[in-house]
Amino acid sequence: MDRYIEVIGEGRFEETAARFLAEVTLEVRAAKEETALREVGELREEALAVLRSTGLDDTEFVEGGLDVHRPWHWKKQVGQTATRKLLLKVEDFGRLSHALERLEPLQSRDRDRKTVSVQMRQPEFANESDGKATALIEAFTEARVKASRLAAAMNGRLGEVLSVEEGKQAKRNSGFAGDEDWNGDYSRFAKGGSVRLAAAGADSEPEPTLQRPTRTIYVTCRVRFALEEG
Image (cartoon, rainbow, N blue to C red; front, side, top):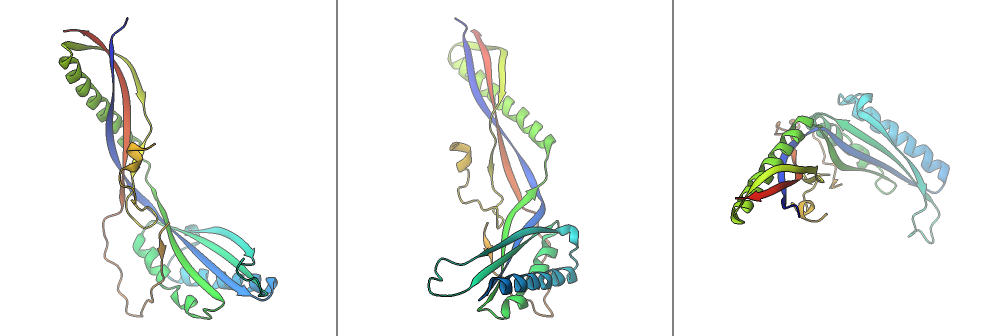
């Protein structure tokens, strides 16, 4: 019978946010469906004009879709609600934050019928294949160290590598809004935040530049070594 030791090693690497994502939801309530549709379209154009005026360009906007429905709790009321969504994808969080603040006046008008809300989505993180390759080497090295010590405890020694298998990835989220880290390292062991629009005064200062959010990716490597007599 072949004798072997099989262990799992773990490595890690970090990914940095490359683009920040925000979902802008524009909602209009009206007695008639056609009125709600027309006005939510107008509100969308106003929002786009405001966002463009802050320096955002059309390559940073993505269509988020249209929805028309009658809320279930309007049992005795006549009316429809129309919703349009815009997705913003911006590399500089300071520019994005500044643009979103400028939407506040739209929310202040006609609050009973029109709503503008913002929800941060998980950022897009840079794909770093070199980092993953290095982490896999780290995982293999850890597996070999553990196996060597285990073999010594069994009065044996490690032989050749019989098999190597990459395991599933796990991650620790960055903690940024939309990428909350509610469970810490839960995903290693067990196999969007809302943002209110704040009023922006004429003399508001730009936010200081801070370090970009990073998340930690964990990789595992299952290795089987031959076990030889010591």
